[in-house]
Image (tube, rainbow, N blue to C red; front, side, top):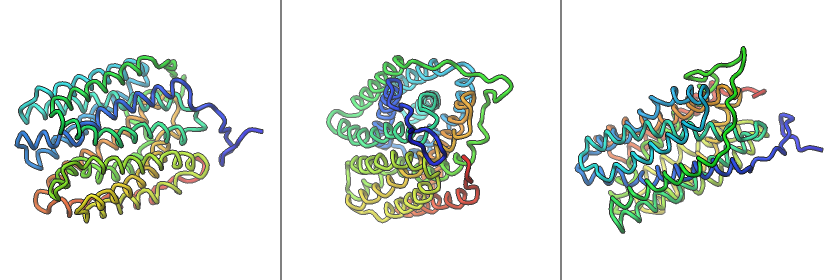
Amino acid sequence: MSQVGAAGTDLRQPLWTRDFILICLTNFLLFTSFQFLMPVLPLYLQNLGAEKAVIGFINGIFTVAAVSVRPWVGRGLDKNGRRSFLLGGLLFFSLTVLTYRWSSLIWLVLAIRLLQGVSWGFSSTAASTVAADIIPSRRRGEGMGFYGMSTNVAMALAPGLGLLLLGARGFPAAFYAAFLLGMAALFLASRIAYQPLQLEQGGQRPALFEKSAFYPSMVSMIMTMGYGGVVSFLPLFAHEHGIENIGPFFTAYALTLMAGRPLSGFMYDRKGPHVMVIPGILLCALGGYVLSLAESMPGFLLAAAIYGAGFGASMPALSALAIARVSPARRGAASATYFSSFDLGIGFGAIFLGFLSQWMGYAYMYRVAALITLSALVVYWAFRPREGL
């Protein structure tokens, strides 16, 4: 007798295939390259003389650039296939990372960050769409949970390693290392056996946006607005309290997030999204508030653990919701819609909270971020998915 989930679906379809492992490793290396520079770049900009608001703006413009291309990337993925978009995006991303090595002016960093956002829109949208193609539909929640773990492992390791390398070898070494990680991702992505393009006759056609993904995307956008403040200003906030290496925060955050992702996907496949999304939003809001009170490393680590548990519970369910009702011909559009909202949240959060921090300081800024995160619960409950997903 086959194993059957809550919706009567066969749960024995193989998940850990060669291509699934390759796309997870590709995503891991891509996010390692990205996260490697997350705590390094604000310090680099500060070293160049940039003010808080400028640092927030430069971090925010990255996500705005990614959002601007994601819909077109999604449509291209559905119309022309996945391989060229993923490989081209990874190469473009790696080259933009390398050019930071020779950027000694703030406006030049801004220009590079803009181009890097475009390359991120290509590579991350394509990678998530390839993963959705590979994962069996009846194990989508579980598969997206494990795929997301590759991101979380990168988040656990990369920021701390980036700061360690920065302290030992300086900014050029950090930029070179991030470049090599991106090129390794490109190599692994070239080994994937990509599935043939599936175009439907008389059905759904490639599009810029996927309407059915708007609801979970909106919830994700509100939640990531608070996270935009965390990733953009945490090294500077910690520095105010005498903490030079805040890498352990990212490690604690990613480890708790990583622990929650498989459970969230598993529960989504069997119980639906509510059981993980609602507690996840509450935990993320609490994590932001605890962060605002932190004055020493134990306080920062506690905030990281709460934040990570919240994102680990909610994000796999929301990402699975975004593609739950979408045919293969529109998976690129659904991925683009969802990740555009993710980027918009981080970008708007970095810009808005950056200006807010100018006159109220980082601690009160994080309390505002916690309230913004909590408002996602209102949106989720108002438009919550009913049975039959």
